[in-house]
Length: 349
Image: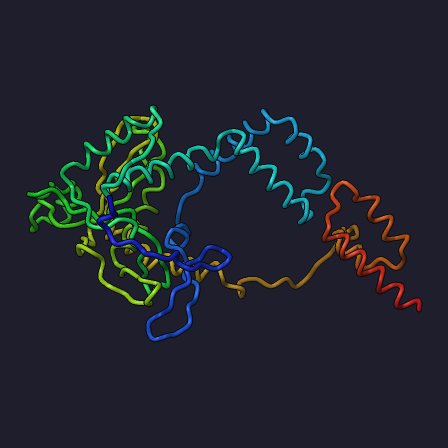
């Protein structure tokens, strides 16, 4: 069966940081745009996420003796090379605690639901997730898929990203949430048309969705963007002309066999994206809000290993530096030491 939706034949080009390369209107060279999720994430409350990550690292370290040993070998956690090693240890610990399993499962569920909405074969579904997809089919039965994974940009903010879906509401519409009705007393409470639709597979029904403010900002940005075709550098209105006031999140917690639809105030999210997020980004880039003017030190400042290598005045000193830092020595340090040795030999000759 062929995909009934238009799909981009070639992959969107990105820079080494994963930012989409977009040709701005009236220009000929592609430039990196900020990913929408990154741009709106500047206002996200990451407190609970940070706690979860720490729990996963603790569990992973408890189960991996090799990671415990690797961490105990770190002699200077402030050294930039050893920091990198610690980062790798922490990532491995999270993986050991299945910290990345939820993301992997969520990606798979996204793919399964996309195939359902495209009318394509779903493939082999693990038995424990079959109820999830049944719940998804049931809750979306009276919706019509307008577009799937469309890439859109907002050139004013220079951001770009992909919405999960644009969905047309059921025939006859749906009743708006009470807070929307209170804010719009003179408007029809029955909502019709198309909406930006986002699928979330994390959390549980009881816990609800963390980060809903970020989700509202993200969906609001999509709703006020235009679709972008990187093969032509062209822009077109979003399919279905989705509403700019309300969007819908489909909460499908992996392994729960349950689905829930949630109204989201994407107009409020867009207000935050348009007026507050740029100010926060600009504030974080400010370099003119501090200036050191006096310093004192009771003890000599500790030099980093690269600085020690640069200051070494003999090959014997280089050998001593290596001996002292043998456990954390890297090929990069070897290259620096070799270069310094060559400099010392040149001076002597």
